[in-house]
Image (cartoon, rainbow, N blue to C red; front, side, top):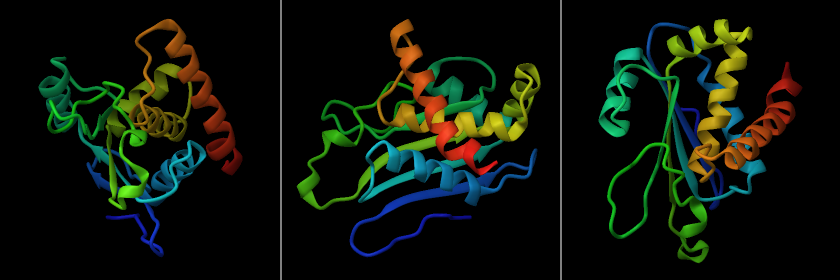
Amino acid sequence: MSAGRRTAALSLDVYAADEQADLPISVDRWSALARSVLEAEGIVSETEVSLLFVDEVTIASLNERFLDKEGPTDVLSFPIEDEADRSGRSPDEGGTGPGSIEADTGRLVLLGDVVICPAVAARNAADHGVSVDDELALLVVHGILHLLGMDHELDGEAERMEQREQQLLSRFYRATQ
């Protein structure tokens, strides 16, 4: 299930896949939100992002493998690393982002993957008193911002990230409600 589209020479591709059966997911809707967030953050060409919706077993496995944390979580971001001393993907490390690759190289920037677990999102939505769609929208935006290098390890960073999430949600998600 792909929602990415390639147009002309410059493209911003968001590939989305629903690989779980817990909740029905509109991959087109969430990939459109991801694309809007990327564009608002200045990512407009030759960039590819994957948005994956997975079950609890899958996200728990990823959470343990990459973060040494037990059990399922709601969202993981895997920025594609381009540093010489690292290979592969490391989730939620506030990756270097697309600015680290020369714009004039003409190569596609593989920004990374955002992996979301709708079952965990549904539980969190109930705890937060919001709809499942509201929670999924937040997770899409949150995951994309992680790919772009934002983090929430320090209080100042967390406040900045939360503020940007709310701005983007108000502009692109709540405006379509």
